[in-house]
Length: 265
Image (cartoon, rainbow, N blue to C red; front, side, top):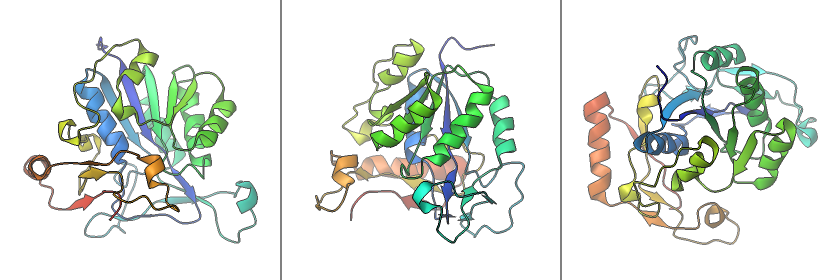
């Protein structure tokens, strides 16, 4: 039975690069956004194109901490000025046919959200969108990108129905209401991390470790660094708020390893 609340699909796209390795990497922003959307009544689905534990994958090369090299597929380097680099350009993550099956297994969403941690190699987002459009050609799609030019290139390539935002959607769930018609007032303070829900790591197939975000923004403002541009507000969680998150994942999922994702030093 279809829920009366909007259904939002969140997608973590592939990596396109000459090299990539999983050093305890997880899409923190997407997991946090998923938790906030669920807390505000939205139905959430999640597909991770970098999933080591996809049921089609057979992995024997992960470390004891369940990190390691991504599955990679070689394909031609079409990145303009990078095409002459004498190294193999690869897609890192699950195979496209696995992604297609995952998309087909999801009920038609009312909105699709993608994240992009690397706006320089936008081909990875473009390829993800191309596969999504084959399954859900008319569903509104929003890309969160820090570089507006990259996002606009994607929008121009895929036409109407593709949008972008430079602001973190987790700061204001009403952005999703703009695309779904579902109004949800914020049940948290965007400028107080102690009021945010724990990221929705339970959407992963396995939880070998949990990333922790105890602060945002850098305490410094070095002229050569983009940290203040990407996150202008410095916020810090209290220890009384962080410890319960550690205990939550340890008690519920038996997690013993945690990675800190804080900015700055």
